[in-house]
Image 1: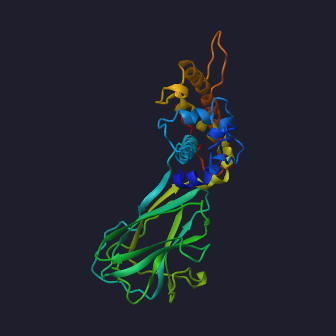
Image 2 (image 1 turned 135 degrees about the vertical axis):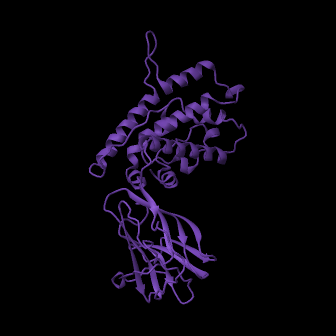
Image 3 (image 1 turned 90 degrees about the vertical axis):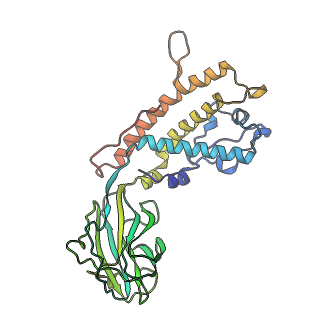
Length: 356
């Protein structure tokens, strides 16, 4: 899988549109003119800004709205290509850290300082994890800040203020940790600063209630840093093991995430994105609701557009290699190149789905 929001943001501008010479339609903004790859959708002779503007369903669309529409077309094309290349959604593991019965009777005793979990990710590439939520098991009420650190920076990469008001609570976090941010590998620390006013957690002293689940590609252990009082990463040499319960039970999902691979190899996708966006633009022109004056597309023009998209062959007609067959070929090539990049990371190959 990949992070849609990050791919949309990072790959936008991979392809662009050229400004028309016609001053009446020279309305493309700076962002839509950008093409980091050198591919321009308007290099296709059937794609003209004049055509696209005049076949908009909303005839009074403003220039700003039109440019937003073009941006959406490009982002949609980017995501369509990525979904066609990466057709799997790879969950590797998911569980609560603690799954056994807990007898909520006795209170835990913790020393002041940082208490939490050390999370180490395997060295395999493209491994990500998500802390969707945490279950909270405290016997007293109060507030604290839950933080997630990475050893690459002193400030938390995620944080959330939590108010304990009952003996069992759920706090939704939706914290996603992949390889596309400034952190990469290293160790992660999930926890909080325990002080004299911090809520007191229950012990996990019933049967196997303190047995932690094991996760594919993750190694998790409890740690403490006695006396650490600031909301920054501590001196790693002061870390100690911890046997007591800290009241935090994270719900963790481990999955394969290809966001960083896509971002770092965006040029592999450029030609396919250009073809996908060109097809989208031509379909918009062919399916316009507007039908008068210069806005009307003749049946002959519509057939020409469809031939450009799907291709044309047969006795007595001009043979045309369509954009869609070219796109299918590009998708196949991308899959091959991505598999080369990932050779040795996985046993399975990526799967290609049929375009429709």
